[in-house]
Length: 103
Image (cartoon, rainbow, N blue to C red):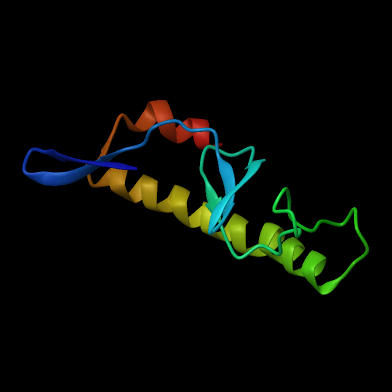
């Protein structure tokens, strides 16, 4: 979100981005979403990826699966709800162009 002042109130403008995965630093992985995702992923030693189910089901794999199936979808849902509330309050600029691209 970019902050701007519009009619004496702080407003926000969403700009399109190709989402990437972060664990303190970028991991060179795309999210497939219009947002970046930063979390405490269990990363591989070379930081080229995160532990996934293509490896044996270790604690690291289960941790990442939980993040991807529970935590991240919940946060994304909250983001969409917050953007909708900002729009209802007149504080989100160019709402229709960007909001529907998040789906």
